[in-house]
Amino acid sequence: MKLLLQTAALMSLLLIGTERAATAQEPAGQPVSLDQVADCVYLVRVSNPAQVPGRLQLVRATDGAVLYEQASTAAAFGQKLNVSHLADGRYAVVVKLGPATHRFALDLHTTQTRSARLISLATPGR
Image 1 (cartoon, one colour):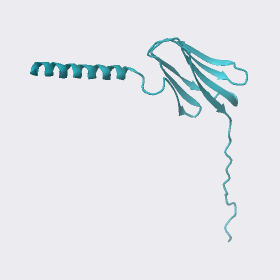
Image 2 (cartoon, one colour):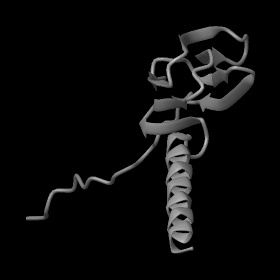
Image 3 (cartoon, one colour):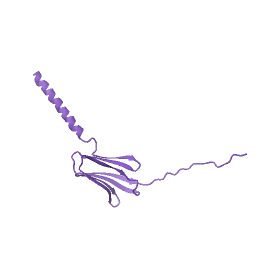
Image 4 (cartoon, helix red, strand yellow):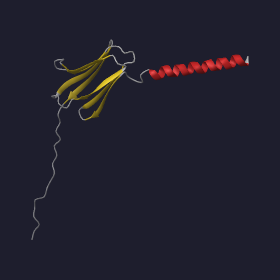
């Protein structure tokens, strides 16, 4: 009986260890992330553990023109996108993984900060 309990306990530990190992290999959170890393610079990261055909695109929303494209079947891929050279307007970062599509809207517009500073030009009286 004692040997049977020890065997059952050992099997439970092995099963728990196996479940944890499988969970650790699965992607945490969303399969696609888009983070701003600097002014007008974005980092796109794609987790693709099934290694299905994937495609990363930067698209101009007004006419659908593809401005950048990367295809991959790697388990993880991505790209740093610098959009500072693009004209003001609406764009989209589109990631297709198999049948799933992830779309991030990007609205670029130039802003100018206007400031004023008073500088005294008066000369001290004599």
